[in-house]
Length: 470
Image (cartoon, rainbow, N blue to C red; front, side, top):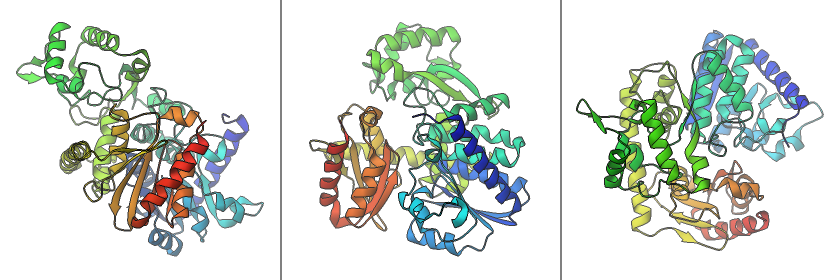
């Protein structure tokens, strides 16, 4: 059921109250997640605190672990502002002065600890799920952080485009080939401020930085029949539709094409696709005209990938510098991005070459062990799910070794969510039954479990999936 006018009024009241708490604070500790959404959110919070003239520190965390909870509870700062994290662990916080701007499914135990006055625990919890919305696609962590920043000062509208980066980084535009719901409010702010242009275009990755033949060759989610993974066919296609691949000795990219060339190529590509895939292949794309050309920051998908490549390789601070406009950070980011591409490519090859993907009746899974970094195994699982190499009719579960156990990432096609699947609830329930912890979104979630509990965990997950999906 969509949010009502009353829900939105209540959300604005809560935003205003949290904004006042930030204004009243002398010191602020910002804690944010390490993915594109989290880094974008952390940057928005960092700039907001700086503009308020507050003494503040920014920390990035992979997850809310026991030591993170202890650090939050023992913090001496007046306010701890937790971005793109925190909602799943509210019942474990025991100090006043906490502000959470998140979009993950909230901790159900927290409500049971509250009195009639929600502010009794001193937690300002700003999450779309609290206002009748779904945080997996209606607004992201950076979006909620931006709304709070705007409540602090409407002049912070110039940070809206960073929330768009966060939303696209969390694939919130995937289900409708466009951002929807509260994300569009954020979009409108970015457009009004001159920071965002919305294009109707093919939705493949790399339209600014990839050579056009590679843009077609590496197209995915959905793939282009006959072109994806076929270098020779892509060159033949360009010749057939009358598009020069090179100009002045250099390869052109998709954004170098004229409008007429784009229209010819787009029409031919969509004609090659099944009807359902056409809807996913064409739609809204988000461009930031004020970012430097050729940097990979003018396109939201590419900007988000730059941030992901920083955070997933323990360099979220470089992503923060980029969000703050420090172009000297791009050299460091390029090293991260090259490592990211290399690791993702080798991870996909490792799974294929070793035939790791296994299928049960209601789930499919693979165990990457120590061969794939725990910070990117979820990305790999999502890519496999969208590659056509496995069934989209059942969720995919991925395991990877972690310092504190086994990391689990779960992904599913949104059509399963429409049939009742809730991966967040499944990951939370199954992990707790084997002595771990987890949560996330209906369509993408994760957990950490003891290494010797994988089979038991899979059994529980399968039972839960079978009971949810109609």
